[in-house]
Image 1: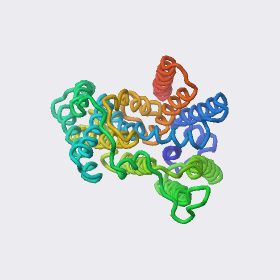
Image 2 (image 1 turned 45 degrees about the vertical axis):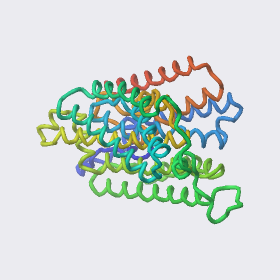
Image 3 (image 1 turned 60 degrees about the vertical axis):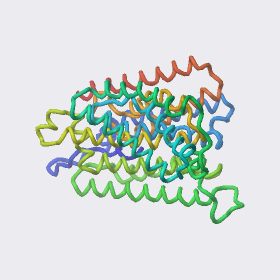
Length: 408
């Protein structure tokens, strides 16, 4: 939430320091999509919390909600790279289902252990990513067509791999990826998960350290930052929000392994997009492909790498989903591609390319998953569930277009 809240106005020593009002307005303009979606997320939680008599915001339901959101969040995390570069991947849903089925076959039918199954499944995902990247980067076929073809192909491949039957059960170690929680280590009889509490404190401290270091770095290189008082207020608010979310899991059964995996991936991809040359290349290609080519960026290689990463991440998402169900089914992954794309767009990734953040995609995944969870909890007709999600996506795209027009 906090990764892009600072302004990028260079300090001009010949002018007066920008006013607090200008700094706040600039920050708001740069992050309006994320702020809007955060407000929407809070509104969704409040709404369903009221009409469900508090059941929606119970520790049990919110913990389950976070687990349900992990698969889509993982897909949305890597979908950001794809969409920022100006592409789209329609295959991730059926591919995630297929790769989850591959993992189940390797484990249940072939008899492989958890580690070999994970490695081989990720390898298959990588190969599929290379296949997509080859056609997009080196043959010039639009990603929409390439991945649409794969989407249809892998829908059939799932049936072929599973023989049309459910494959189960998975090994306990594999199942723990999707269902397991951090164990209690020091206080086994406590009413909270002590291990998760310690890790939660570490997360919050790390956020404070890295956010402060980011502020100092921006000052060092001559960029305007929020006044210290506002910066501290912002940090306190974010820390309280983090503590509130983490405490829900700590007081229930602990932090799920799947959530830890997601946090690790979010940190990794945030680093890739913000701190690496590859990340800058991705944004440059999406912002202006011709300018990127003229500046010497190897567009083919970058696009190939993007789809390779997408393939591996889809494998991870597919395995997490299979582990959570403790089975592989022919229906696995159905419409996941639309949920992942919607999460990325709702979280601020532009449909035109060149803009988007990993943290925003996670917010988007929470919005879509909260809608799914809340409407299912209230037993709303599936017809209305699809209509509501469609309207939310339409609104998010409209905000994107309106924001671009104002910035132009």
